Image (cartoon, rainbow, N blue to C red; front, side, top):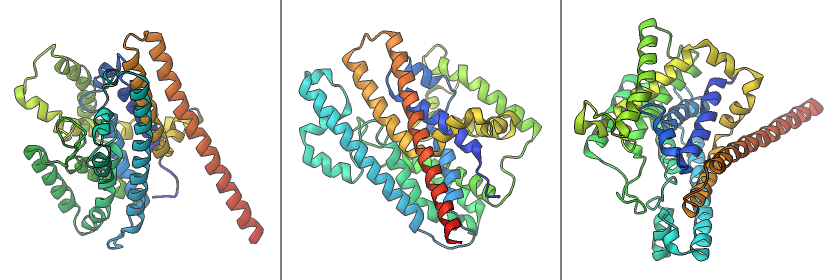
Length: 367
């Protein structure tokens, strides 16, 4: 692969971050909006692209077990997670102190019943209220990434086969990590299941880094992917809201399980990625100046994601305190939240460009 950045990853990741914010904000339309994108949503796209980005950033061909860089990144994400947890704790404390506790129905309420014990659990990633177990899942995936690279160099078939086997066993046996903050006492995003999506991303990212074709065009496959991605939107809506019973019966829940990365979700996200990689307009849009702001948001995914989590948390608090909030006010909050995230990305990109320019100037001065 050349040194040119693959802007399609940033283009797809930018809207995914904004969609995650909208889905978590608990607007009156958030649930319908969340279910109107097919069997998968922005989370699968984000994790798949994260796997590709991880390979592009950290994979070195036949270099053995390289732990330092991905594990440093994992530790940084762990610290960011703890910072987000602390901020959300502070917000919940203010809400509980200012209003009747029954007004606050969030998962944070239980924390204050035994803050020392739950604090220790939070440090060990076994106490994570809703929307706070996404970064920890990525921490686990990054810790696994060096071993995935090593296995990839030995046998790509073995890597994908073992990853698929772990996904299948974890999903079938409901094998998960403990999370005392949620009703089911397990992680909402089971990393043993979601690692399969991440590993598929790593496989594709390695091919990209080696200059090999990624998801090459095939007419029948393209048509099948398009039909599946389009049909999944109305089908998921009618199945989710009970308008029509699923032909899979009781098995349907497992097929679309978000916790276990159900197979329909994986097929759906791969279909979307295949279409994005084979529609020329997507590549053109990714490289067009008009889409630069969206791509910049995708490029600075960690701060944008973190801001989105806090903004969605604040919006959810407002929705619970003002349950009859007018739709216009909700749309204003939505627009303001998205605009703020894009603004953060723009500022960070400006700083990155300034640093790069200063470094280049320094090299010219010393040459």
